[in-house]
Length: 187
Image 1 (cartoon, rainbow, N blue to C red):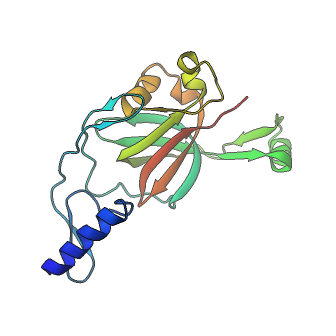
Image 2 (tube, rainbow, N blue to C red):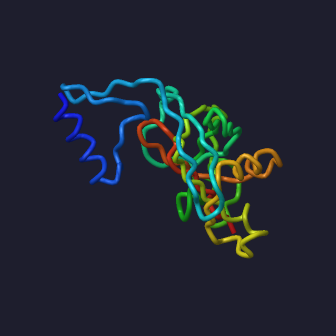
């Protein structure tokens, strides 16, 4: 068992920890993981600022969304509990946008955001989530089309001001956790 744990640790270090088990997880002889109490994370320095330590739930909240990219209107973000509530939408371009807009009695302008239901889902956010915005950071970057990485604290400030709820985002899920949040640039 000791060899298995040492081998798993060496693999994680060599692989850049890309597929780390959850914080506090331990490898068993059968190759599965067990989870102990989560351990606090160390502050991470990003180009934008220093991120304060947070502790993610050991088990992600249940969701019917598959891992991958999902377009959505973000509703709430709790930086302390690491949860994000959102309303999934379809972001369409080209002929698909024209057709869907026509079916909905709307007009498309190079793109169309279709929201066929208002179901709100709450997801677990990974403590290492990366957040990118463009129009929200235009005042500081000088370019509304430029993606700028921001901290979760800055994202929370966009929610506090009501700005984030007015934008379309796409979130990336991995292991049923949000690992990336991107504002969709809209001209």
